[in-house]
Length: 382
Image (cartoon, rainbow, N blue to C red; front, side, top):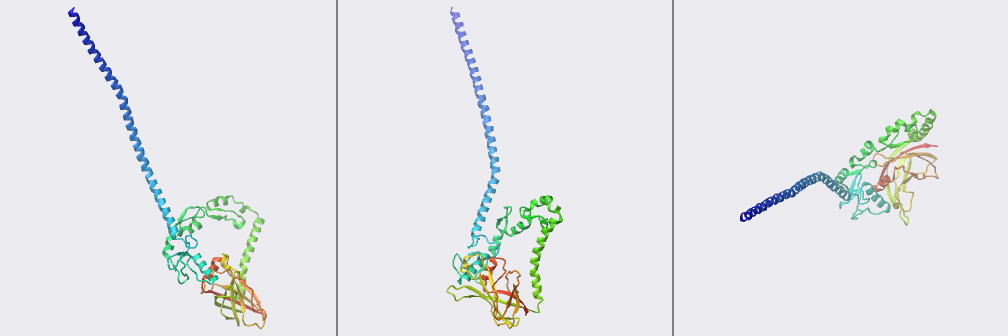
């Protein structure tokens, strides 16, 4: 009996030992099974994090030049805008396209506004002043600023046709010769084709243009209208050649000087000194805008002039006269011959328009102290 219990106690110990061993194996297996997905998940997370870091580095590397380029563009645009605000004209607030003048305090004005200020002062009989500091300005007191002219010429400006930006010193050439969007006419415009479009479409249009295939009658009507225009233009040349063939012809280099009327509101007019021509004494008078009440309030300005004979003619005489630029003047004037018959009772011609190209040229003449020109005269005696 005693041996049985001993055996049973041994069996119990062995059984417990086996259970502990079995439980230990199961625990280790469970731990292994638990650590395997944790290790797998941790390795996957590490790979994902590494890829994310690489992606971020690539994005930063790709965005960096773009950000730098954007920064440069913003800086350039800001610099151009700041220079444009500094170098702009004090009157029109636009960048000058040609000459730049400055007052004694350094305020800038473009050539057009500068001459306009001088012309307004001449009309109102006042002293021209700088719009910023009110210091006196004139042709002798104001100076050219060549440094600003060169700086402005390097600033970019948009092409009016394609919208691209080019330096101002090359923009005119681009718009006239190089821009693909510049408007051009069809080469068959002489035959009546009225097409006008961008330069890059002219070849396709000319290939489909029907005007080269028109009949002679259709082309003739258009050529006839062109011949009329050419005849009108050649009429001036014929008149000039006719005057040059007169027996009596003379040239005088004259100066128109500004004066004021004695009226309550003094009006500006110009007059030359007496001069001798064709055996008579003459004077030329000129006025602005046909004696308009307030010519300084309008931008449309023109000059009219008349020829006056001071010594009474003994017999009627027909005089042809024309104003030219002359060797001492810089006025741009179109050729136009006037004609009037002077008699003993009619010694003043009507006012004729001085054929200037535009109001800007008129302002340039008004801004000058005197107007230099040449007068050509030819006479036919009756």
